[in-house]
Length: 233
Ligand code: SAM
Image 1 (cartoon, protein in one colour):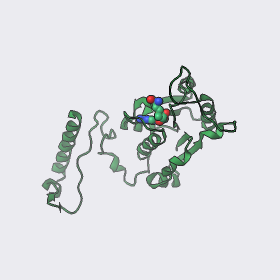
Image 2 (cartoon, rainbow, N blue to C red):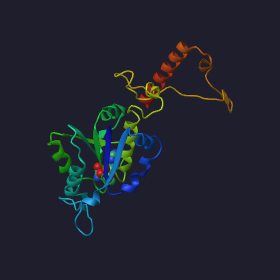
Image 3 (spheres, rainbow, N blue to C red):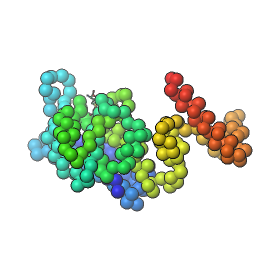
Image 4 (tube, protein in one colour):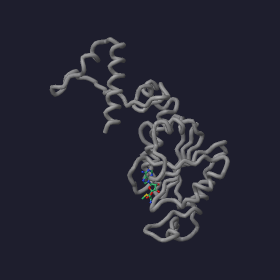
């Protein structure tokens, strides 16, 4: 069972992880999500986790001491623990990464705040043989903290785990899916439901034809068209 552990100074920020698909998946024992408060690791009266940057500059940097203690404390004895350090300077998250993460036994998310986490945290765990460190960004913009980024990744990974989606066929043809074909990443064709006509807009005829071969061809060409249009932007 895949175990997600999140470390944050705002654990309440992560409460949506109890809801919907993720909540049900936890109830069924398909995955586990544990949330940890970084400040529990501090011993000073102010529970401080940050300090001024060496070399000067604006803002505060998160100290490696509490991070190291927190990560050590929640690490399982899995052969490989995936440590995800969320940072806008990381590798951009995508569906391929979601598939890789879905094979993990334990993923620890380090949700930064302020100017981010002291760079030695990533470096230290890269040197430990049972950890694989991933510096991951969810896009080219700067958030206030890593919590939302961690939730994005968990939501994308969890739905790939066996039993989490009611109908696993949903994974086969969706956008960016590599389940069916490892070499391509198309976005999905447009979807329609009832009524067949709405505000003067009709569902494409072919979808009402009952001809599954032609429908499959049409969907494929629509997926290719949408992908081309996105790439041209
Ligand atoms: N000083 C950092 C920089 O310029 O790269 C930005 C720090 S940001 C204000 C605080 C925290 O938010 C980061 O440590 C990271 O955990 C999280 N964060 C911000 N943007 C993110 C993104 N695009 N992807 C993932 N995490 C992000």
